[in-house]
Image (cartoon, rainbow over all chains, first blue to last red; front, side, top):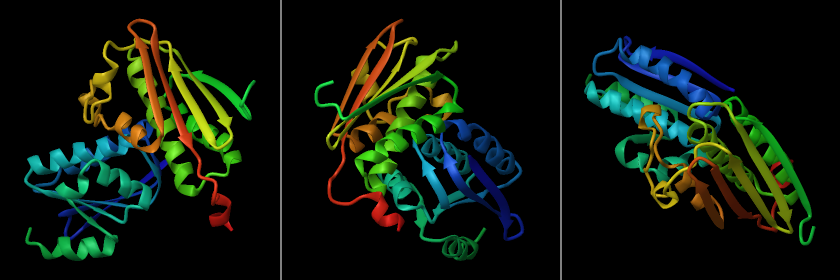
Amino acid sequence: MLHSHMLKERAGSILVVILSGELDHHEAAELRLRIDHELEKMDSPKLLLDLRDLAFMDSAGLGVFLGRYKKVLAKKGEMAIAGPPKPVMRLLEMSGFHRIMTIYTSRAEALTVMKGVKA
Amino acid sequence: MRNVDNEMTIMFLAKSENESFARVAVAAFAAQTNPTLDELTEIKTIVSEAVTNAIIHGYPEEDGYVFLHCKIMSNRLEIVVEDHGVGMRDTEEARQPLFTTRPDLDRTGMGLTIIESYVQALTIESKLGEGTRLRMVKSIAKEQSAAVYEV
């Protein structure tokens, strides 16, 4: 099971998606819809994915992230990842995510930086 | 059977709900080889990738069964994931990193690349109209077990 919780920071300019549980192909479709639904309402969206409590992820998760990254870029926004557990970090590195977006150790650290950058 | 310490087979409908069932079942079976937590995560990941491929690519239109066969031979775990679906023409093409036939589903083409980096051997057999069979062999290190970390 995947649980996702979304919150907005800085007057709605940053969408924070907090994931826990297991992210596989079965869970990916609904997550994609939920995030896209929020992104559509935002101009130059800043998207932060908090993966600290994600117990399992496979390449379906990478697909969700990459798809959202493309959408966010198309709207001249930015995307970051926070707190990936070691096995998730390994997949992110294997597929080069660390080269296209910032991966922070915690949500707090990510938000400090993302709030500081001019909108 | 010669050199086989234990063996199991399960079959299930090619439904995405069964992806988590498959990886948990294999992880529970593999626990008797005393894997580390990292090895257990790798086992779950390769099962998830292979079973997802069977469900998405093996049976794009109609329902069918996925067969999962596991053997323990000393410190080696052999996992075979098989479908009797549409099959593919070129297994070498499928093994290329970032190759996918389903970008519409946000597939990254990383599945087989991940499997290859987590196992010691991967063979893919496929025939158009007959199905696909993935055989993965993973060695389990002897020294430490997940039980050590769980205490």
